[in-house]
Length: 260
Image 1 (cartoon, rainbow, N blue to C red):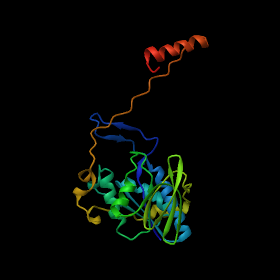
Image 2 (cartoon, one colour; image 1 turned 60 degrees about the vertical axis):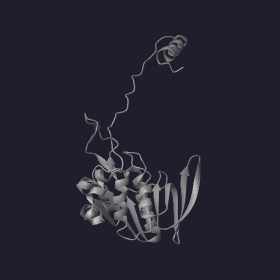
Image 3 (tube, helix red, strand yellow; image 1 turned 180 degrees about the vertical axis):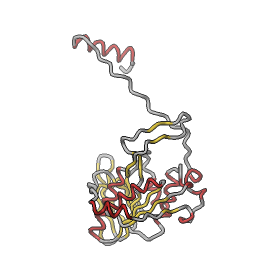
Image 4 (cartoon, rainbow, N blue to C red; image 1 turned 135 degrees about the horizontal axis):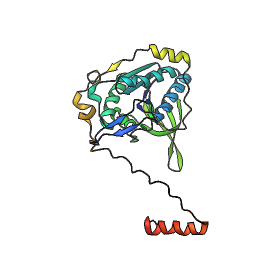
């Protein structure tokens, strides 16, 4: 069974992020990690391989530093990793990213494609479904449980207030939700293997694409500017006896903040 995982390297949760004065770009501290939801996708791929045999390949798009996420995947147990690395891929949106990833996936026949529900940096949750659309495959999102047998997949998917059970023919695309599994910690032997692994780099030409089809030139969405969220006002302590403080709090809410 051939399983492909689409992963993304994102800024670490503790990385400092600043908006440039023009509001068009982000300055990100050089601290990165594999996307939170993609870890569940990778773990599920490895568990499927352990149960059914086969091969797990991981694909990501990014600059050379993104090899760190790919080496993490190899350390966990992935058999191969590929990096889409070219200036033409930069500044893309979900559409141009999904197009390139779908072409990379289609270079070899595969049975299952897994990725995280969404990337924690942009939170759009669009690449997985778009990859499925480009490949003409069924897609099941927010997967909490996945069983594979005889060319079929039975997935439990989280929906509002309930769980939906869906059966699809393989090949298919699945996006992983938190709770699907518990990602493993790489063993030292896996880390040593990852350090020595050769990671092929693919360009648009390798995928049969023109530079104008990917990255910013192929994007359907243009970023006007980034706007920082409003800062919360400082906490105000109201002194006095409880009854007096309560009256003052009500006065502030009604006359000053006008929320009552």
